[in-house]
Image (tube, rainbow, N blue to C red; front, side, top):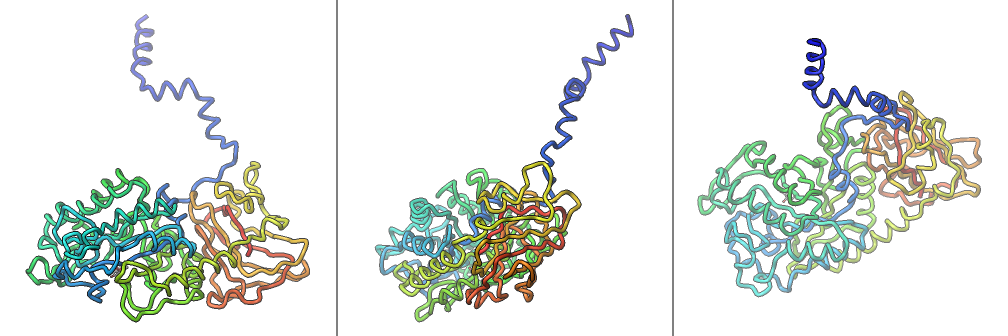
Length: 494
Ligand code: FUL
C-alpha cells in the first residue's frame, strides 16, 4: 500500500511534458520518421522578413532634400531652412511611376540626410521643410506622399534616415539618441506599417555645425545608437521592415557602383560574404543612375539603359539586391533623361529576361530525392515554394533540358530554395546543338554561388550580354559542389 501511494505521488509530481511523452510515444516516433523525406536546413537561414525583402530584388533610391538646392553632397548642418525652395510641388508619385516602368518593385526616399534637415514635420527639431517660407516647402511631407504613392502603385517603400546628424546640438550625447534619433525613426514608422526597409547609413560623425558648436564629433556606432532597442521598437510597428546597414539585417555589398562579386554568400560581410559565417546577412548594392552624385546637380547626365542593365546583371544576377539612385531635381521631379533611360531599361528587362524557354523543354536530372515531392517538374512550375533536391550526401548532379526545336538562348537563371540555407558552391553550364557534343559556356565567369538568384550571360559578358545568342537544342546545368544536398526552386532559360 505504502508503495502504491508513493507511486501515485510520483506520477502526480511528474512534469506534464513527461506524461505526454509517455502517453504519445508512438506519435513522437512518427514525427521523427520524416515520411516526406524533407531535407533539413543548413544554417544560417533567412528570417521571414529577410525573405520578403530579398524578393523585392530591384528598387529605387531617391536622394532629395536640402542638398538638392545647395548643390552639396554632404551639407554642414547650418543651412538656413529657407534654402529649401522647390520650384514645384515635389511629386513622389512621378518618381515611383517611372521606377516601376523600369522594372523596380519599390523605393527608399531620403527623409533626413547627414545635414539633419527633415523632409517631414517632425516634433524632434525645427530644422524641417515646413518651417521654410517657400509655398511648396510648407506643404512638403515626403514620407506621407511617398507612402501614399507607393501604395497606390503597388510598390514597396521605406525611408533613409541618417543616424549622423550634424545639425543637432545633442549629437554625440545620449539625449540625441533618445530624444532625436529614435523618435525620428519611430515617427517615420508611423507613415506605414507595411514598410520594407529602413536605410541606416553607416557614415558616422565628423565635423559639422552641431547647433553652433562647429566641432568634430565621433561616436562608437556599435553601441551609441541603441540599435537592438530600435530594431525591436520598429519591428513592433512594421513587422516586415529590414533595418539595413547599422540595423544589422542586410549588408552593404562594399561598392557604390552597382556591382558585387560573382561569388556572393548571403552570410558574412562585404563583396563575397562567407560560406562559414553563422548569421544570415544578405547583400544590397547601392548605385547611382546619374553622373553627378547621390543628390541632383545641374548639368549631370543619366546612364544609358545598357549600363543600367549591366548593373542589374552584376547585382540582382549575383545574389544581391540593387537599390538604384535616381535624384529628383529642384522641381521635385525626375528629369526627362531619367524617364527615357528608365523606360528603356524596363523594355530591356522584359524582352531579355521575360520569356522563359525552360517550361517548353523536357527536363531530366541525374539525381532526384525520393519522397515524391522533389522532382524536376518543380524547377519550371513557376512556384517558388516547390523545389528539386537530391538525397542527403549527394552534392553533385546534372540537370539537362532538351527542346524539340532549336532555341536561341542568352541567359540562364537559377534560384536556390534559400529558406533552408544557401548551399551551392560550384556549377557549370553547357549547351549542345546536336544533343551529342556539349560545350561549356561562360567559362570566364565564376560559377560558384547561386543563392536567392543568379543570372549567367551565356556569352560570358555582362556589358554585351545580348548579342546573337547561341542556337541550341539542349542545355545542362552541372552542380559540382555544394555545402549539402542542393535545393533549386527555379531554372529558367532566356
Ligand atoms: C553614404 C552617404 O554618405 C551618401 O551621402 C549617400 O547617402 C550614400 C547612399 O550613403 O554613406
